[in-house]
Image 1: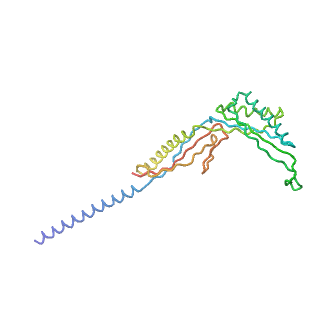
Image 2 (image 1 turned 180 degrees about the vertical axis):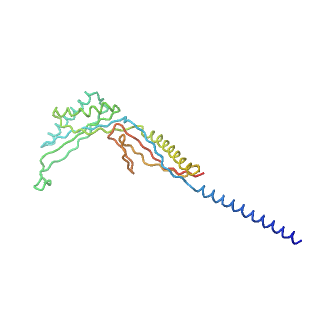
Image 3 (image 1 turned 90 degrees about the horizontal axis):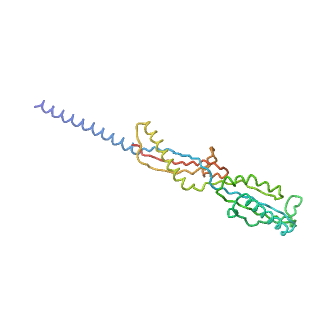
Length: 245
């Protein structure tokens, strides 16, 4: 009877020990799974594409001075008229040419310290012609050759052409999608190296677009929108956090 009672106690104790071990294993697994589900892999994905500008804006101005406003105005209107004729002769349609309003500055005699006095010595008038065209190569060529006007007595102030890409809004969507794909590939590689996988997206943040001159490594926190180069690179960046499976 004593032996039977001892056997019963042993069996009960053994069963209890097994149950405690199993519950510990289950609890450890649950904790491990919960910790794993809380883990996040955060990566940065990027995409870059070369684009060619499809719009150019070029500005050229003239300034004239005279002792009287009428004198400066006469020279100015003659100069701006000849600039417009020159542009049209180069095959630029009139509707692509915009003439600005006239800006004027009153000139004063300087004192010995270089400061303006109240004495008026003359007037300076300035006006500008702006060309806005999709024929980028033509305007680029005209801008280089426009110094010919200087030989005709026109004091031309030619600005550098500004180059733009008009389909940038649609391209941004495409570039962000490519950057997100790149982020996913990077996250999968990181997870694989630790024997894990990635799950759903936990968070995503879009970086600023960088539109730089071709092959430039310039970066700005506020973003860059280069207008000095015909060929440009557009770079999109996204930061994405993935759950770890």
